[in-house]
Amino acid sequence: MLSQHSHYVPFCHDKQTSAVNFPATAVSPPSTAVVYDQHGPPDTVTRVTEIPPVEINENDVCVRMLAAPINPADINRIEGVYPVRPPVPSIGGWEGVGEVHSVGSAVMALSPGDWVIHSAYLPGTWQTYVVEDQSLWYKIDKNTPIEYAATVSVNPLSALRMLEDFVALKPGDTIVQNGATSIVGQCVIQLARVRGIHSINIIRDKPGSDEVKEKLIKLGADKVFTESDLEVKSVKSLLGDIPEPLLGLNCIGGNAATMVVKFLKQGGTMVTYGGMSKKPITISTTYFIFKDISLKGYWLQEKNLNKAEYRCSIDYLLALARAGRLKYELEMVPFKDFHTALERAMGKQGSRKKQVIKF
Image 1 (cartoon, rainbow, N blue to C red):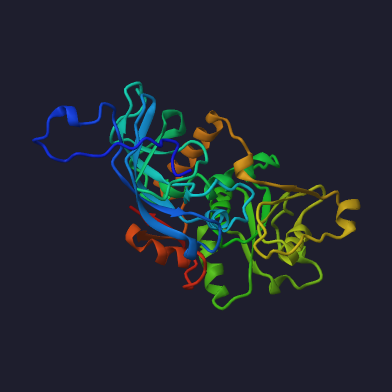
Image 2: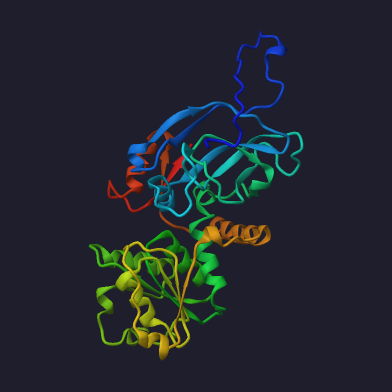
């Protein structure tokens, strides 16, 4: 469905027209949206179109979107390969920040001009105006840089929850991760540093890997290794005086996951939150029997954080962003260039940065 509000009320812009010609109930402005009518290649099946105004009920909030990212999961939903697929036709996007444009008569907690993000994962952020119930919006500090406000609720939140929800880490402990150049990876490095936790980071062998290592170390990484660096008999000899990791994070799978497990100490846990290589995780029986390694999975959408946990986590992350202690590489693109940004997000133009649409 394009919107939960299907009532269409035409606008009348003639100031001389009698008041009886105006709608009796409040409506949103018309919206420009990225819509897909069927699942398939995102750069083929998406189109930018106009959406009629929708009714604003007494508990509704109409939000003018300011910015919204293109996440890998957004692409997978359009392709039809993600576990959760909204019915088509649908509007793309599941994350973003907006400014309250107007509110229903019963809304007291939000006012026009407030900045808000979704307090739940709802489809439809790739449009200029969104109307939803007030309970689904969460007010944030307007001093937050727009690019971080738009992207806080998926990647940074995932990084934070994985650091907090699986192993009781304390200052001086160590974590290890692959996919360290991803936004989740960059956030893990910085959040670990804030807590006094060491991070061991694994990156792929690519041209410019030395430069990538330097960037991650500047973010706070203790050690950064390419996969070829780890082709040694004992990877633990590379740690120096850093303790063996209690927690490992895997977003790649295949051999990269095995490398994470090799670093883990007795009783350690590896959490898998992605499978970029599309290869299975193959772990030697030895790690289970003699090292008591645990393997777990993480999917933020199924985490079902309660409102208090969600708000506490978001406020904490945005406070770090405002203080310049949490940052990651982004590329802001005007909405008119949406399909260029989409191609970049799909890896067709060589850009590695997350694409964020600015409305």
